[in-house]
Image (tube, rainbow, N blue to C red; front, side, top):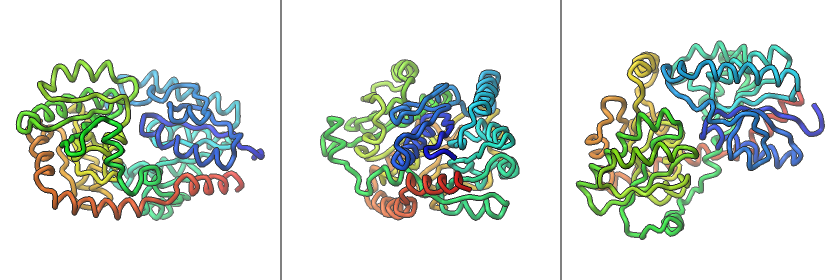
Length: 380
């Protein structure tokens, strides 16, 4: 390894770009002249990452949706692998996106390049046989959750618990008043945050249901205010969807600013994914929704190992917050569940205490812990 390493990275969507950006902060603190390149997004770019392809090329979820884009994605992976084998980085770090990264990692590892996977695939939730593929593909896994390293070590894969970078980035004390002031919301307003996802396919399937739920909530509670953070590049999809499905709901679109929205709100309507963990770290009651192509759903639901889908419920091992999935994610049921939180402050406070404890458990200075692990891997 050179004095200053050269690291290739791939982050395949908005949440991966956020996590990779937080990791890059720690890496750059250790090696200010660090050179990183591969596939990434704006959070990574702000730290000097050289993106050969934009991260949103890989932001596709669901079997049917992936098949539609398979040739393009497979072509990107093949060309990226060829270029990395020529350029010989000191290591490759795949950030989440296992369907893309594991095959690439296997190719690079076979070619003598160290492969590190940051963010364990959910082998404890579904597709457990993927651990066999990981054994062949990676040298080390950097795990976000405390129970994961033991699962990997049992299967002969080196792993380190580094905590969750969002638990470091999100303050323990929620800046509610400051966030409301920044968004121009009154202190006494009743605010609902609507987070339909960061991928185009997610927003197309989930957005209409959440917007219709907001319209139903507004009909029953005219005093409500709604904010909807729009992920980069999705305004052209969300704006006409708002006109079609939101009715008279007073929904204000935000250019990103999801953390301000979560800090400012009283309850969240949220698509299952990383945003549910962000909502939990902001100590917000939520209703988790998910919807996808019916064939993708039939395939995925048969492979689940746990009764929960949302990360807060998985980590707490309880239906701490409602999950309304596929046909159950109707506007009326979503509205009922969200309004139920607003009507029960004591229940919200009890949930907040559970989320406080979860936040402390996941807060481990991830950027430093992951950088320490990566430095050890590079030196081995």
